Image (cartoon, rainbow, N blue to C red):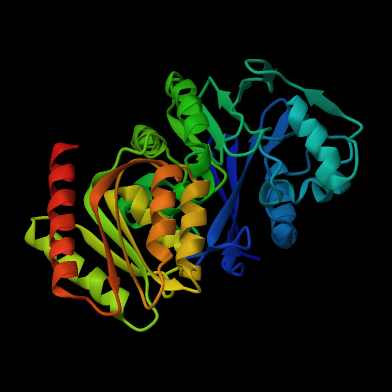
Length: 400
C-alpha cells in the first residue's frame, strides 16, 4: 500500500505515496531510487485536499484520506497542476466525496475536460492573487505558468506561512522514512533534485526564475512540494538552490560526453580529461553516451560550467546516441556554459560538422576556438590540439 500519513502542523496532513514500481518518469527519465507523489490535507472549518497522486496508488491514498478526514466530508480539491501523476485520482476522490468543489485557474478548468473527459459540476475558477477561506486558514493562489505546464499555480497559506509549491522545489527519489528536510542529509537529496530540475523544469528556466521571484517575496516557513521532501526547518535552502538552478549558476568543472564505436573517440576523451587535470581542473566527469543515460549527463552539465562533446562519425553524421544528447540539450535551452568540440571519422566526416552546428544554435555558449577532428586513430597533431583545448577551457573557466 506504501501510503504515508504524517501531521505536518496541527490539522495539516501529508498524505504521500512512494512509487518504486515505475522505471521511467514520463516514460523517459530513470527512477532507480523511485519517486514520491505528495498530497496534502487541511482540516479546518472547511476541508481541502491539495493535489492527489498517480492512479496506480489510489487505494492506499483513499484509505488515508478517509482516515484523516475522520468521517467529515471533503469540501475542496485544489488543482495546482493537471499532470496525471497529480490529477490521477481526481475522479476517484469525486466518487467518494461527490459534493466536493474543485478549485483551479481557467487553464486548469479547460485541461480538466481535456484529460478527464468531464466537466465537474462544482468548480471555483480562481485568478492570480485571489483567496479561499477555510476558517482559521486562508489560501492565496499564485499563478506560475509554464513551471512546467501552462495551468501551473501554487497556494500560500498566510497563518502558518506555508507554500504548497506543486512541482517547484521537487526532486526525484522515494522518501525512505524521511519526510522532512531536518530528517535528511541534503547532500543525499541534492543530486536527485538537480536531476529532476534539469530533466523536467530546465527548459522553462526563464519562467521558473520569474515564478521564484514571486515566491521569494512571500514569508515562508514551510514548503510542501508534490515531489520530494517537505521543508519545515530550512526552506530558504531549497529556495536558494532552485534560484541557482533556474539562473544556471554553475560550478567550476568540465563534463566530457562522447560517443565511440571502436575506441578512437574514447581515447580522445580520456586524453583530454588528463590534460584538463594537468591544467588544474579538479572536477572532470567523463561519460560514454552509450552507457550513461542522457538524464544523468544533462544533470551534470547543469552543475558544471564547462562541457565538451565528442563523437565518432556514423553514416556521415553524428553518432546516434550523441544525437539524442544534442536533442535533449537543445530542448533544455542551456546558457552560461563553455563548450568544446572534438571527434573522429574514417573516410568522410560529418560528426564534428554537426557538433559545430549545435554550438551555434543549440544554446547560449562560449565556444572554444580549438576544434579537434582526427581521421582514424589519435595522431601527434591531434594530441597537441587536445592539449590546446584543455588550456583554453582552463583559461575560460578561470575568467568566467
